[in-house]
Image (cartoon, rainbow, N blue to C red; front, side, top):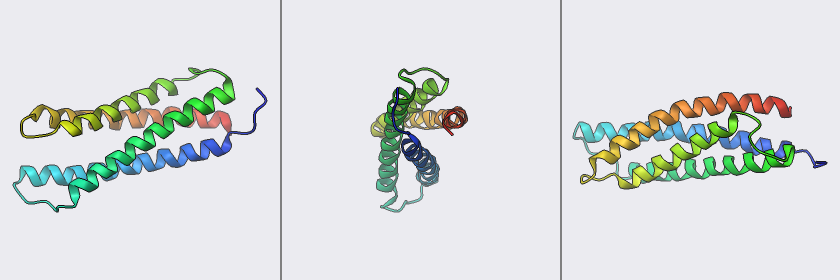
Length: 144
């Protein structure tokens, strides 16, 4: 295909990935603060839970944006998907992110399993982010 350069698309992807990782770190900090306040019986700032939910929504949006950029850019550059391990790695991250967001909406005193699921998914998401970052670096090298 004779298409214009997709470098602008990859720049958006790089920023989105950096911001996704930043959101993940901020979610870890705010979620840890919420968790330890609950476990230790301390009160938490009233603004913390809404900030945690907002950061989660931002991260979900960024991960979905990354998926769209990856699919559009790869189809535009190669004409097909699945030329590297980065696609399954990305799908794993998207799936874990969406599952984590869903489990967050289930957390309540009546559903103690939801908090455990949410924390477990986020631990696995850390590993998936590391994997998708490593595979993404090799993909970026193909375009530069």
